Picture (spheres, rainbow over the protein chains, first blue to last red):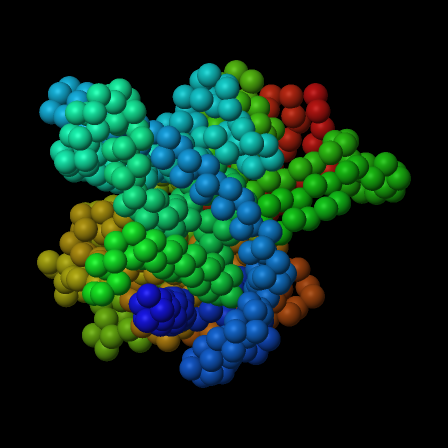
Length: 305
Length: 316
């Protein structure tokens, strides 16, 4: 198990470094950062001053290794645009994104698991097809469009929920639904597949033969086993949600990591973009690692591979 | 006053502000600016009363909002102008068609400025023939050669220049993609097949300054300064953004920018603007319009420098 864990950790570090190199290169390939920061109305002298002030006049490898060295000391630098420490910016925005992600995941699980169970129990009936249709719709619909439709119905027409912002819990309801719906199809399909698998197994037949109530067979015996892969998938989906929050937070004007990333990309705020990309990558890597470890604990065959 | 980076700004009234100040005492007690990046969300907030005022409302949104009784929609002319820079020196390619005056004139005649200003930009946008904003000091619009929308004349000029079947080129841009696509359509109608290269501003500026751009769409707000030194003076005076580098124009602008006599300044700006227009170094297109939407209870007046003056606003 230790060997497996070390192998996975090594891969995780390599992925994090690769992500940081790619995002660093892409940002520098998109044009001169000093010009971008200065904007269309900055003079040549001002742009030169920005270049020197932010160390953008140094060779690219030097800039990258300086940045990497600082990151290892947990110094993420200062934002070009916000004129504030990137660490503070990220720390103040992260709870909003994590909260949104947790709510969205909760909604996704609450919708997807019962639907998956229902689809498995009522296999090949209209219930099964309806559940699959909901799943397909969730995968096909662009999240920003779904978010705007929620605003039109629940905020503009019914006036039940606030349109945007993050000052109360009510402000998170629509963003969490919009973000959670995107994760619903995958979880639902896995639950359905897992349930179909488990329901045809011998120990379920035995449980039924013992005369246990159908609900007890379904929830105590079948669902507990069918949900094992879902736990791992949920961890990965949570990572996806943090990445997907860029769109949702922008639509709902939530001051989380996603909107910070959006602002930073639009303004070529390089230290913030680098920090956010690295943070989301690290969270995703950790979640994937957790999912791998969980799977390995549950299924010894994976450890050997 | 409190500022939260990226989120917004809150302001409280200063009741002790100078009574004799030229701008007067403010009337609104609390001001809270919120950053709402998405245009549709801003609109929804406005419709539900979540916010009282919004700017940069797109022209199609402005049309929709005009039908809502408790909202006022105002369009304000702005100093920002849109234009094409044409590679008159031929630095982008040795055989660049833009080196020929007739080709540059053809481009100017090919573009339907009026339709661009009224149908796409909307609001108070107006077609433009001169390389400055008309209300700027020294921006003498009568100095400009008027290039009417005339595709037949454009085709004839292209034929005279040796391009009876038009030519292929590239048009660079960093904003307002829909406007640029309309321009591409106008150019294609006279035989100029311009391929769009849509870049981030920093990348475009590198290419433009490196002389690698045959034609680019640009927008310029003159730093909100009502003087031609901030428009033509910035683009034609030999600085790195001056792709044309016409010594005569540079000389006139140098004099106009530095002389203290208003008449001398005006005369020199006129000469410079006249030559820029005659030589069709640019295709000036239109000045931008800014749409504002706000609650009907608010008294608000827009200004062309794009700076909202809430100090003059009040609740009705």
